Length: 389
Image 1 (tube, rainbow, N blue to C red):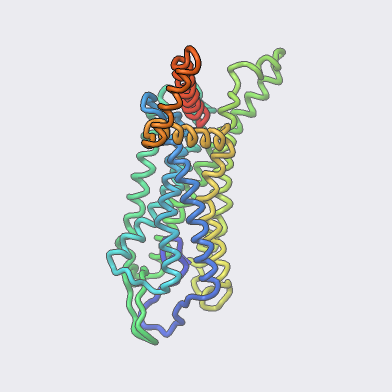
Image 2: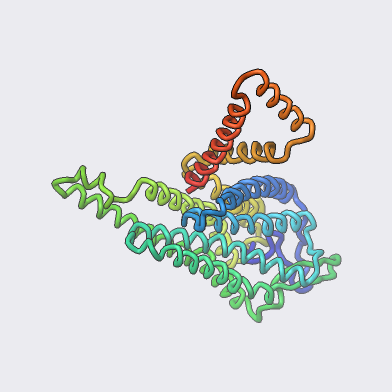
């Protein structure tokens, strides 16, 4: 198992008579679950991105949290469309059929997607830290977040670039011809490969975890200090209700970001711990100390994190599901009104003429109904924008 490598299929090295990997029952179950995770993650993260794109053009800026969640959804969607299909196809084919260029490119994209998901989660933690600990700096928050997001995406590409050089197609002829995408031959000694894997592990998991723990530790300390000051004040009740305390919407966003971090830690920690064990004791696989199904389960549990992020966003966003449904209904009504069919248009014209002939003031009443319907649709869109963040 290698978090930077072969998606659980193992690697081949030299001409040693080691058993070749097969499409086992555990691998078949892994492929089936990966397909379900792909459909779930693609639909959920796609809905978050679609909601972010629904902002009217007259709005110059999106709320900060909405921009951050859109970037997190984009990172998770990149993991979904790169890592999941690659893992499923690789487990089915067992060996590598894509050639050397595809091997290097896909290994680069795989690690870059995983880096981006972790780093954007760190940016969310830094934004919540700034919003709670230094709320007076809100004026520069948008510019700061934009710089941090650009750094997160750029750093993801830079740190993943070595993948294009250490991975290559490796061929063997015994006991039969077998081709695999692996790091065999890229390192002069085993300690060099272990050092590279440890560097990747530190940048991908340890450093993001450390930054997030420091940020939320300071946030919780700041909240505790404010509550302590409010209780010690002779006007504690008034202080707790004043604007100097943390607004309810900001607290709700803080809880959402904390839950996102917790799911990231819970989902990926078991997989990385197993990877540490393998890096320092690679013979555990050959001696069957760890069943292959455990590696499959832990990797799928890590991928499940991409499905949880948009669900958490919906859970902590006020009326997200209801307003999303209203937006869909308004869009459908607007489409039906703007592009009517010939038959429907004739029927509406005849109906309007009949109403005008039967009752006085008919045309004015019909125009009033159309105007009211358009106003309701506009109000629906405005509520959608306001409630999404």
